Amino acid sequence: MTATDDVAALEAELPLEALPLDAWHRAKGARMVGFAGYHMPIQYEGIMAEHSWTREHAGLFDVSHMGQLTFSDETDGASVDAALETLLPSDIKGLKPFRQRYSMLLDAEGGILDDLMVSRPGDGAFEGAAIYMVVNGATKYDDIGWMIEHLPDDVTMNHMADQALLALQGPEAGEAMAALIPETADLIFMQSGPFTWRGVPLWISRSGYTGEDGFEISVPGDSVALLADALCALPQVKPIGLGARDSLRLEAGLPLYGHDLSPAVSTIGADLGFAIQKRRREEGGFIGHARVMKELADGPGSKRVGLKIEGRLPAREGAQIYAGDVLVGEVTSGGFAPSVGAPIAMGWVSLPYSALDTALEIEVRGKRIAAAVAPMPFVPHRYRRKA
Image (cartoon, rainbow, N blue to C red; front, side, top):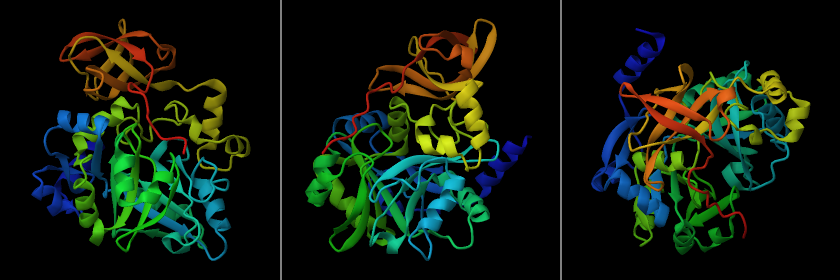
């Protein structure tokens, strides 16, 4: 048994926790599974139906397992910005109020510890915190420990464990959200702000994990059921489970931490260099900077790519990728893509085999199936980038 097996066995023995909407999901007939230490809905009506509904209308996802953190200091936030720029490769000092950025935590070797979203709340939100951050649910306690270890004493980090998080995604998400809170119609992609609904304070960003237009809504846990009921009472909205969330993000070419991203892989190889702005590349000063700069100059040893697969047989995570008799990589996410009408995958391959249209083979159930490196996203993004 490997160390990974030991950890998996230990996690399997730990009791699963219930999120604030647990009873709500069960009342709606959700099939619940264990994910990131919680009972979570994998589907309601069925993954294919829920996937299609989100692409055509608007789906409501419970993502309350994610970690919501705030950072503050006793000054104007300058200490927070400087401290976080030692941990994150992104430009935090240049982040304007009510805007957010995608970023990552890197280890000393430049490996990815987590990917995350970081926002500037502005005056009056989150009790004056300088930064609001959302991290992955499966890694949130490791992230918190890592940041406690590296943050200076004058920066206070708060884990908002009582706060829930919803994601409303789909081409009709804007219409649905505006029906409850008309002011949200002014938000554009990666913009956020404080709002109030029936006296409940909300933090809403125009972002998400499906490639569609949509919102992520931070709401007190004791009010989330009321908000979920109000959203699902709208004709555009249905509750959607984890199964469709995974197929939607795969079509959108979005990586999943713990699968497509891990400490073993790099930012540049993952094609996430856009998260490292010019100033940070030039000045450095963040953990993992040396590897980032080396790979920008010399190229990474391997790269995350999209894979188009011939036939109908899907390639799943762990399937090996070959170029002739040479093992060149491994599938990290894969499955049937309802919007594409064919199986697709994402994986890591050696750099010489990462060019678009490179012919490859994937070993599935003891036989090789033809594949080729394909551009991502597989389905075009439809973010609302203009007011």
